[in-house]
Amino acid sequence: MTGASADALGFIRLTEVGPRDGLQNEKRLVSTAAKVEFVDLLSAAGFPEIEVSSFVSPKWVPQLGDAADVFARIQRRPGTVYSALVPNERGMDAALAARVDKVAIFAAASEGFSAANTGGTIAEVVARFVPVVRAAHAARIPVRAYVSCVVRCPYDGAVAPSAVRRVVEQLLALGADEIDLGETLGVAEPEDIERLYAELASVLPPARTTLHLHNTNGRALDNARLALQLGVRSFDASAGGLGGCPYAPGARGNVDTAALLAMLVSAGYETGVDGAAVERAISSITHVLRADAS
Ligand code: HMG
Ligand code: MG
Image (cartoon, rainbow, N blue to C red; front, side):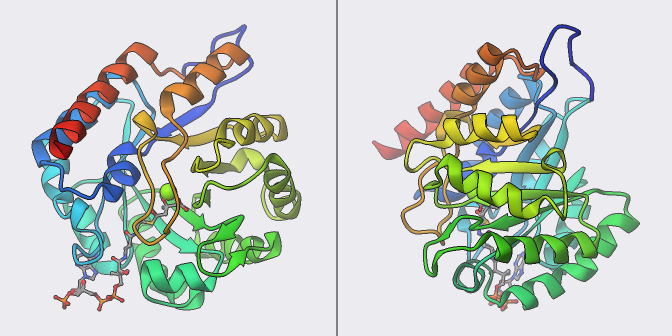
């Protein structure tokens, strides 16, 4: 990894997911121009990765129906990976045409969320990803694989860490390059995160995971601190704490990028991300969302 200074504790990789997770959950449609400006300001902040949008069905997530236009219009900064969610082969074709640098497939650890979010059982959804991963690797594009509901599901309740491990094993067997653990509801306590990583220890080390924390109960920073102690070195965050999934009722936004960054910097970690530039991106999108709401 680049950007680590000699006296820092180490490098933490931040993926900014606001343009995707944040904007998918807004009631009103944000214009393509406003999304492009948001992504460009985030690029200026120096994130190693920005999750720009999703090539999903616009019937399911109309907010991100302009993914191809957004990709066509953003200014790509060398050093930033521009990624997108892909649910199936059709989405993969569109993502390749848009020249994404990386794709994110998404499965769940609970059957209730799998059905509500992706219209299939866990097994069906994992099977859908087989040709997607094959196509990504043929195009030399890495694959992030999300597992949602790693602690609790809005439909099925508590999720056992062993259920998460089983899905992680299937996604690794498919060839996923990165496992991203989604705490979709934002209700985890640090003990839940500890139990989860203890269960996953036999499958992959914490340093090979990304943690995607929503922050409904206000504990996301505490969970991130605990994860750092366990060895997690990659986190998702959302500018302004925007976010949530339309198919996860009750879930609030992701951990706020500015708050996570401040915590990491004060603890002595290096991220390569410029906090003042993050604030400019946050002002831009909050201005748009406030204007839309009025
Ligand atoms: P389906 O309805 O079961 O399947 O959806 P379908 O094949 O019948 O497709 C329905 C319609 O969508 C059809 O159109 C398809 O052509 C079209 P029609 O024939 O009715 O006119 N369609 C598409 N259009 C554009 N791009 C595509 C595409 N695929 C089908 N790729 C499907 C199955 C997976 C498509 C649907 O369930 C879907 O798109 N789900 C996405 C839901 C979503 O994006 N949720 C939010 C992201 S996940 C999340 O937020 C969690 C995360 O943040 C981590 C965490 O917090 O835990 C990642
Ligand atoms: Mg999410």
